[in-house]
Length: 443
Ligand code: HEM
Figure (cartoon, rainbow, N blue to C red):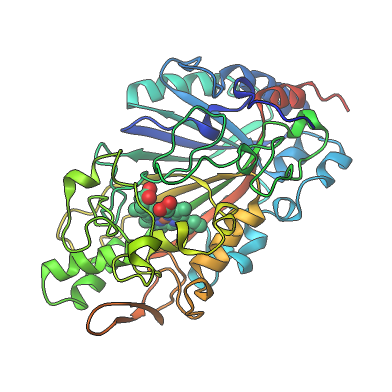
């Protein structure tokens, strides 16, 4: 492999290109019942997918991306030698990794929404656009690639949205912190963090350790591809609001507790820069709202608790060796599904709402699985092994969240599960040449 510039024209736009704001998105799962027809589908899809080099998409202001599960690659008849070259966790699929991911009890695969986590999930199509009208036209283009094909079944669909306020269902501004990727030309969101090596996110390039991450064979299939994690996460918004209320004596304290759990006020303003009060202007300012580290003025976490969601998910300079942080970074795209719970409602209305969580990265094991098992569902990082992430950890009614405060630390007990896994899958998002290669298979 050679040191070379990122081949942006071969990388699907969904990998690196930022999403518009606001936007709507649809996830469609397909099952391939006939391998030849599946290959024809790959060829057709390679013409509707935009690349990271496209200023506009083939469908004009709307984007489609394509990824495949291990069962999908098998259904296409990808040669065994090539299948065997994929990492074991990808071959096993997300449901089989439930133990590592903390998906037990109500989050366990036997309770997942069908067909998520089954062998039927082969292809994931993601379509997104700034508005419904354009989304429909791009969906039409995407649908045209398979509706006429006997042997391809659409088996699931999920509509999602990112509001203009960019608030996720708990009410926090999301989509703020993204790593810069060397060679992508897309700026990061924190001027104090250097761009990460492209090999952290795209296969075929050097990573932060200086290696070329393992790539599936042959090179034509692996190069410019990446791994994607789709996870449908149900959010118990009423439970979250009630928990805050029951553990506070005023509205102000509720908001402060919520901010301590997240590491940011609901406006997006970071505690690191405004620890006492929310500052909505700062929260909405993309130049400032992620421009901070922790170590200089907050080594002990009096401002941003070490156990808060954002400090766990990206400890920034909190670890002595920043490589140990950089090798676990991820590109993340969260999109809300379901209607927001109206303000002030404290009782569950039974409506399903939450986040379609998407991870993008070169290593499922070192990035997503590590973060999920070590930083979400374990507290060794913060010196409190039995504490889990207060927002998305599997706290099961016995969770704790303890944060430094003067004169005494504050201790929250009996955290319930605010988030329940409804299902998901590990996928491989091939480069555009690789999509054509899959279409041309003739074994
Ligand atoms: C329903 C569950 C979740 C909710 C509501 C949620 C919400 C949020 C919010 C509001 C932010 C701050 C905004 C931003 O920095 O963009 C954030 C940051 C982040 N979250 Fe989550 N999240 C959830 C689950 C997860 C999971 C499961 C992971 C990883 C396994 C994760 C990884 C991250 C990362 C890496 C960041 C950026 C941290 C930083 O760079 O400062 N999140 N999340």
